[in-house]
Image (cartoon, rainbow, N blue to C red):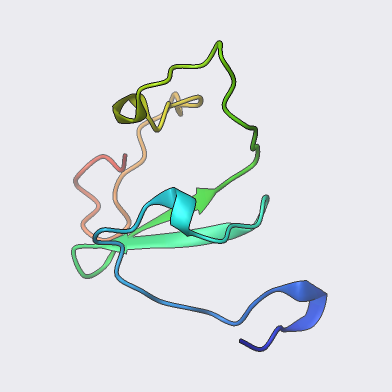
Length: 85
């Protein structure tokens, strides 16, 4: 896959059905677009990364762990009615 300036890869789109975060190649600080139900869009930003250690929750079903939550209600950009999660 060709790289663009600053080492950013060209846009790739794929179905997220059956894809795990561990299978993705992510760049910290790079905004990603998660789109579902045709046109409901959410921006994702991975700002931190660390390895699992003995003091962390060991059960995979406990992840992802929410570490940040907005204090204001953000509506879905597509329908403008449903709270974006």
